[in-house]
Figure 1 (cartoon, rainbow, N blue to C red):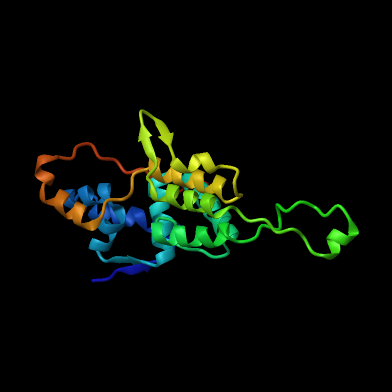
Figure 2 (tube, one colour):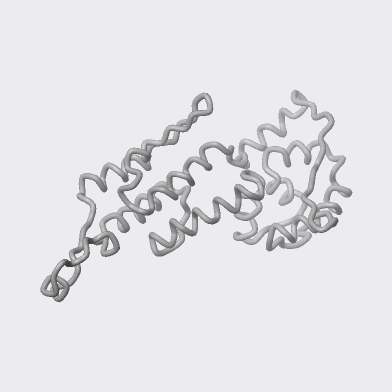
Length: 213
């Protein structure tokens, strides 16, 4: 039974006190919520708009400040590529980067030194194809996190194009914050929840102007 469609993080925060009051004592649901709160809410009848699901997942993974930073980085990347796409989709990322990096770069072109040169139009520069191929290959390779140190194959190309810097930071944040568990993983965990008893679980909600969100 569908209880309603959530259209924003704020809307979910407003409903959380009632949700916790009604379902907070259900250990299987609590276990599910720890692995993926969106799936837990869907199980009790809630649904989400795609935008709300993205916003809530980012808030859960990165926190308020981190989610805002991720959103800013995404906007910077999408402004450069000219359109939004799923940055976690490796094929889509490579396709959009390929189009962007192959595009003549008027912005970085040297200024014409004479009127004759200006009349003939700006010099258009593009990255060499070998360098473009190397960048595209680097984004296929995972970011490694070992002992708190983050190693990204893309790092060696920082400065080659304006899009690289925000993309590097986005990849770092993605690599250092665990993804929400997939449905199949959550279902397997729920079946084994008796082996992982939950104790002293507390929910904390943000507050603003003295009101619970």
